[in-house]
Image (cartoon, rainbow, N blue to C red):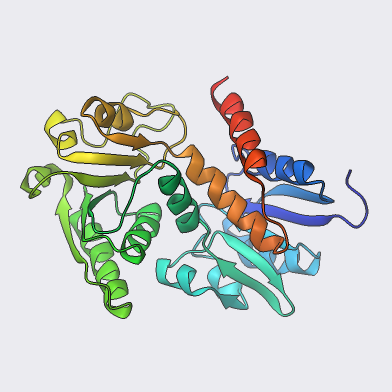
Length: 292
């Protein structure tokens, strides 16, 4: 039951009507017996600063931030977590005495999802398909978890090179020996060796264009042993189908979505640990909502 003492959190972005975060967070709170409400807030581009400062003035305990504001909120924060700073984006704001502190739980969500599905990073040759915001998160995670090499494949080589340079800088700062390079998508055949772990971070194959994959060639998938797609609509993407047909262990994006949300919830409620049975219940509920 929600009372006048309820903890209030929310989501800012544009659009937000499609988001599953309110459903997920409110269900977690209900399962945990917490006096808590999570609300979606559509924010116009010129109103980002007003939204952050207004939420703080209204007493919001925290906010999630979705596209296109994961970078734009940063100037209005009191502090930013080191991992969020390295990624260059925040998706979770946590209330402090003087303002919000920014975190990025996407990397933790991806890590927990990959671990759940047995996709091990350490010592592996890895591929990232795409060079946008989620690709930056994936690159940070792969460096952090000790990938042997990272190749970024993207239609725009300039964007791939920029991300590769950022990943090299992170590896150097952490004194982590990892080779990072960039290639245009169409030159995937230049990849040496096989048994890659691939992380697909583009929106190719997302609903309603579900029949496409960023790379269609069967030969590409024969070079993989494990494949993760960040897309969760549909549950089984064309990328995943092709990887599975080639004998790969695969993972879809729903668990990443769930685990990044749980990481945010636990940041707002540091004395709370979301139980595994609650996570399983949330997963079933979201699968039913997404796929009937």
